[in-house]
Image (tube, rainbow, N blue to C red; front, side):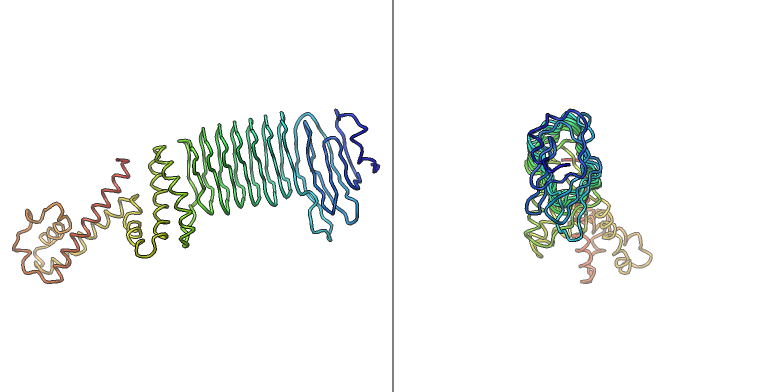
Length: 409
């Protein structure tokens, strides 16, 4: 191609058939209907603007040492799909920067399927754009950030196996299913977005913050299998009652009070949202996570009650732990009472031990003679008092766990 391509847009009519550009040399600035390639100060960017349909299949963008950039792009179809499939960037050994830095979509309406598969760019930016049909991003490596803002997705959105530092969909209306699976992302934001159909964020790894502030979910929502490094922020969000949280694990409770405060606020908001949706088990889970953070915030001494509450009843979620504690309290000291009453009085020893443990019900005066509890040694007096105190504690925790298990208010 001759170098006069820099003024090609002035002498050609709008393209209505398939074109190809191979071994084209662009010295400074060139626009070829749908493709803009800028080369200045060793920085070349590719902009896709003012297009109806665009296809660059397995396109190779290669930068050579010198004043020229060589671009090989196949423009195969203008009316079926928009695709960048297998796009990659080749570098000279002495070149430290990739050529294709940014990919922009702004103020357009696409009435076709959009596929950005195996794309390798520094930044993907989308503003005020409407995607009427399907939008697909699979196997992409976005080295810095993917930012989609004030957009509308009318078709199915699939984001699969994407790696990026920052992924943002802000102030966006999504009318159909959005699926984000098996992706590795540093931080993710969907603030002020409306999801009118199903939303799935499954089997992903979020290494930093995740934000869904002021989002509205109007259909089933799933976060199954996703690993969050920090609890997601849902302040002001409206979740759907079909929300699922089958995560591999929640983030470890931080040791810093400042970080624990941030975690606690996020869990508290999720607990309140689960209470609004009457999802009792999820509410208890977020309450337990909130209490763990409050233990760190309160310091060592103030955190002791929360610590024992977790150890003895799993924060009110387990009735087996307090019931086991009640049995141990009742039967472990039997041998101490057996030693006092003699080997022939095992049943009596068990009765005294149970009466001490269940002293709150005042069984002792009905089933144990007052004479049997006279002249007790200081050791047995301590045992009896301990059984009474621990019996009250474990019965309270057992009742609380049963109440939570039966979803009673």
